[in-house]
Image (cartoon, rainbow, N blue to C red; front, side, top):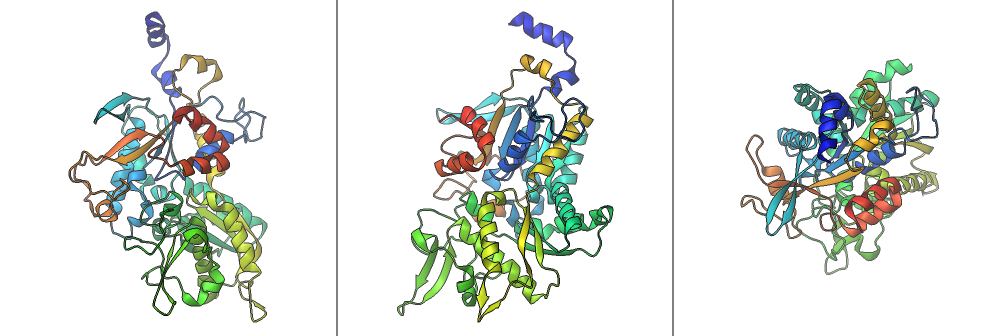
Length: 460
């Protein structure tokens, strides 16, 4: 073994060794695994020539991966509303440093033990909010070293796919993203800047911030607790009394919320009237926001019906079937014999998942930089096929404020000050505690390629 290591150090160039490093995929939570799934299953190029065209071989077959979910600091979509985009950028850059670094932590015997990992050779931002607010900062941040570190974001990829569909049939492009991504104006700005190269002009665009949806998918305490049975004071999602995201009583028959098994929580007065409503299920969040989107289009008198919907958060593809079903349901919805949404909604809406286009851009960047790992070198690397990391609160930090479930309180998460050295987060592997069993079940159904790698990395 010692002779083998000496042989590698003498005969392999640093560039060649670096090409065997993993590709880093990053998101604020587990939604970015949809991008990793697209990368793992992509067959859009000829692997010998690099030219477009499937060759029956997965394009990233010889690559290994590191995935990081910044779960302790999510949801990213709320930082803009709390006027903490500087803190958001700081969290993102710290995560980039982790992926490009060589250390992670494990918890053992009431202490933290540093472990070694490989630095990544490419950064794929599988997070729309991170791309919208920090893509330029990240590229500047990684430019100051001697090795090439390509940085790929999802917004350009999603915009290209939406414009391609608009070439086939004009309509309104919907941007369904986190509130933070919508506030950044990242998608409309990118769509308009790219439109002329697709022979398009005068785009019709509508945006809807899916406040609470990504959080409910990742089971954030402030937005969804599957054991909740009554209205709670620490809930942050849409409600009858929410200032920015009110549930409108006159639209309750349109929302058609699922009320079974505490998926919708109500508070009743002594007359049996529901005086407050809280959503407690990702499908109900989806229903609320799709109705809100169409109501916005009606109020603002959009001329072109919605025919393209960008799923501008990597969590949202998990709800793809629900989104499709609800849109078809709303197209058929009638009041007093009138189809009230048909003026603003097409019978079929193309759902744009930026994941595949992001995977394509990552492949092209890998080849352009000469960073692809050749099959002939595969036997010389000891890197695992995939490693999965997550940020968790550090309970040893006396300043950290935690909820009963062990994650940061809302006030602490968004009340911190950027630029102050913190030890409140640790980067650790996925395990059966920091990721729930129901979430693994979702991976198994929706992301079979990712789950296969995760099953090996995390274990049963």
